Length: 183
Image (cartoon, rainbow, N blue to C red; front, side):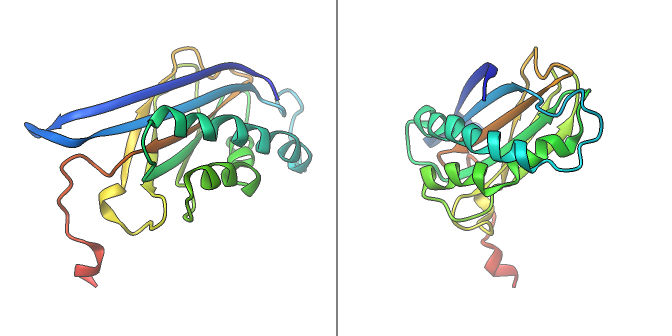
């Protein structure tokens, strides 16, 4: 599995709502831009041979880089597949909605929940939001958030952008009551 581009974005929020965020909220995104392995083949019924050949390598490439970029323990995470205009959304979904891909991140983060995801098709520079949820309990409201991403020259028409994102905490200044208070 080769990539054209590997991008790491780290964002820190130190103040929110006019107040200091303590500890600082840190989010890291690592994205790989790869050639769409199904591009130019017309409709491909069986996606499994390529999933088997590519998905695990992508997870192994991205997961440790997110953990390293965070520089602190992960508490929330998510994933994305953005397919260039010559591909199908199913091409991106095929690569990220498999344990071969996701388990690399779950294992690196010591996580137990499913990774929330976004999949879409778009031109180079398309903006997308990666949803994040708590890594061991998807009902924890404070960690339901999203991070906005845009890579100026990706994906090209025959490419797929695959990304993982992690956060060191929930939303800055979160103050919603626990879900259990409404049940």
